[in-house]
Image (cartoon, rainbow, N blue to C red):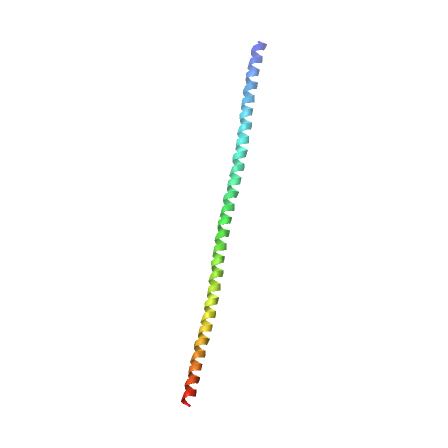
Length: 100
């Protein structure tokens, strides 16, 4: 009777150990799966932030470039305007000088 009882207890002890082993293994796998998901989420978030930062820098670069080109264009137009005005005045003065 005690031998049968001992075998039954041994069987359930081994079964309990196997269940415990697989439960611990499952918890470890679950822990690493959750950790992987967290790392993946932060990586995706980092990539999105990096993408928008690069996009912002490109837009800023072209905006500054556009402003520089615009400033030089306006400067060129002002210089051109005063050059034409100078030529007209000079031409008018020379014409007046020649008539007299």
